[in-house]
Amino acid sequence: EAKGRMETAFSIHDLPARGTVSEEQLREVIDTYFVMFLLAGNFSASDREDALYKTEAFAATYTGWDEAYTWMQDLLDTRMKDEAYDFQKASRMVEDIGEQYYK
Image (cartoon, rainbow, N blue to C red; front, side, top):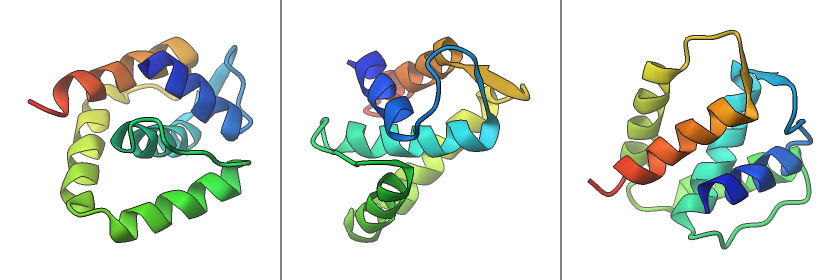
């Protein structure tokens, strides 16, 4: 489930599932993934700009967004130590989000 959502997020952001992405790119992708996660997969976007817009709109209306987003960023900060990230590393990060979010 997490891997499938991450594949979708990478595709929306037009990023390669093979190869590497920067931390900035990965954070945007994970933001998109996180909205998908909170909406139980009920999210679609046509491209990166649409995803960023919809993420911003979601953040403005989701009760508890600030706390949830801060929690997620803190978790990512402990795992982002590289200059480039591949799909596998990114998938492990979002699996951690899913496993730890409801604890």
